[in-house]
Structures are given as C-alpha cells and as structure tokens.
Length: 167
Image (cartoon, rainbow, N blue to C red; front, side, top):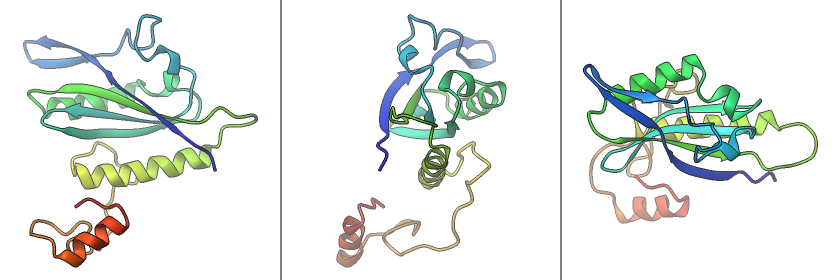
C-alpha cells in the first residue's frame, strides 16, 4: 500500500485592490517560499479558504510536478472564482504528496485520491470549483451521509462512528 503524506496549510498571498482581493502566486515556488520543497513532487492539491472553519474550493492532481500543474492558467481562474465568493478569509493550499519510491509515479492511485477528495469536497462545499467528478450520488443514508438537517438517532450516530462518517 502506498502511503501519501499531507503537507500544509500554506498561505497564498493576496492583494487588496479597488475591485476586491486578488491572489498572487508568483513567489509560491521561489526558494524563499514556504512550500518550495514540494515543487518537484507529485500527488493531489487542495485550494481552500479559512473563514470560520475550512472550506475546500478546488481539488486537483499533479502527475508531472506540483510546480508545473498547481498554478496553471486554468487553475488560477478557478482559484480566483472561488476566492471571490468570500469577502474575508485566508486562501490556503494543501498538498497530498505521493511517497518516494522507485519507478514510475502511480498515476492511478493519484487519480483515485483526487476522486475521493472531490467527493468529500462537494459534500463539504456544494460550490466546489471542480466540474469533473463533482456530481453527487443520488442516494443518502438518513442521519449518516447527505441527509440534510435534523437530529441523528442513536443508531444513526453509532453507525456513522462505525465508518468514521461525521454528518
């Protein structure tokens, strides 16, 4: 079993401008940047906002390197769209790093983790910027997953604990 490690949260710089706040990515991978040591790694990344808790905004995967894929033009657009929904809050980046091993990167495992994180992200934030993989299943388990508001029964709470599902 391949073990992946979480690194972060790394703050993304932003500037206040007349039209609102805008993200600044230029120095993130520089040698002075907090996360520069991850530039050539692979895995998944999550752009999030800290504002009365944490909210995922976008989930992506990097099978070449984080430096090549995390801040490409398409992703920057998605980050800006998600960030613009919040008048306050700190933009953050998390990285789920593929373990160092011999041979090729296991792109299939990275894709599986990305799919899982997208599904978890949509459950947490229906406004997640991902398009691919973001459709929620058309089922729920009352009091356990995707069931809406309401107090859980003792059985539902215990069942949720059994699978470590927090509703």
